[in-house]
Amino acid sequence: MELASAPEKSEGSKGATSSRAGRSSTSEGVIASSGIAFKLWRLYQHFWLMCLLFPLVSLVRTPGSPARVGLGLGALVFFAVSYTWLMWSHPVSRTAQSRKRFRTQVGLFVVLVVLVLVLSATYDLAFLWLFIGVSACAGILFPLIGAFVVVSVLMFMPILISLLVRGDFERVDWPLTIALLLLVRGLGLDMMGLARMGQAIRELYTARRELARLAVAEERLRVARDLHDLLGHTLSMIALKSELARRLVEQDPGRAVQEITEVESVARQTLREVREAVAGYRQPTLQSELEGAQQLLEAAGIEYQLDLTVGTLPPTIDAVLAWVVREGVTNIVRHSHARRCHIQVRQVTAGAQIEITNDDRKSAPLETKRQVPPLGSGLSGIVERVAALGGQCEAGPCHTDEMNGFRLHVTLPIPLPEQGKHTVLIKADLPAAEEATS
Image (tube, rainbow, N blue to C red):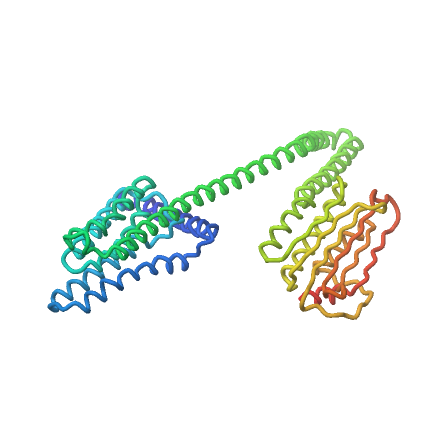
């Protein structure tokens, strides 16, 4: 029985490991999408341990026995460690915790509240500053309504303790007490806001992943449906004709050869249709690439301007213009120090035109050569696509009185010519042009 259960335990441990890895990657993704880095949260969390400074100074400056001072220092160390443990998790990555862990955290929180009350009553009112850290823990630890109630109670603790210790309304240091009250309230509400923001970001991140999963599943179903419609009939035909040819090999060889020839023709036609279908799946669209270019340029801090004065384009023209946008914007972000980018797409009598220009603080005049670049470079791929449609491509540095920059200009004819060879006009040394933006 023990030997039989060993593989099951191994599989269980593997499943647990993969589950933990999945949760870890999810937490990292949620934290990244929040914009609050883990180190930034650590810095912000530990910044509020400055509240330990006031009771520490009071403890050192107030005369007392070594045992009393040592006990006070030990209490402050316990408070710092407990506060750090309760606040350790990033507020965005906090997920549903086990009931046992939550009880442990609530128990430790109650211990901290009692500790601060005892220290404030027996040592000095400077220990009231610890309520700042306690309020932060309450804002992170409890649900929204519970956190609001706890923070509201903690907010008035400095006033109540001061009145009890001083025994007189006039002996209370009201400016300091009111300031402490506002800090306790403010930090508690701040942590509540962070916790609620973390919950909202987790829900949004989960919804995005679910939408992405559904989109992938829908795309798979669409591809499967298209391939089924495309291949189902032809493969059935190939199977039937192949079986018929096998039967006719001895009885009617001429008819068998005819059937085999038809099988070959159908197979080649099907292969061509499959390639066209797959190529159609991979073709980008001009609209999607323009949206992606805007997001990419904004993320890179580059000012973006778009002039779009073109109607519905044939799929082949639309796809080539989309490739131009993708390659042009990618080169700007990777190789230039641009501050502004201008994309202009317009429809003219000769066809469709696109022009991508950007300023570049590092660009300088380059000697222009009429030379086709070697295959493999990004601009070379654009040139090939444009040439296949009988278009013109111009790429190279542009210089004006105001700036030096780079310009990529493509013209594509509409409709496509059916016969004849096409040539492409290259007015710049494209390898040098790519160097101009490096």
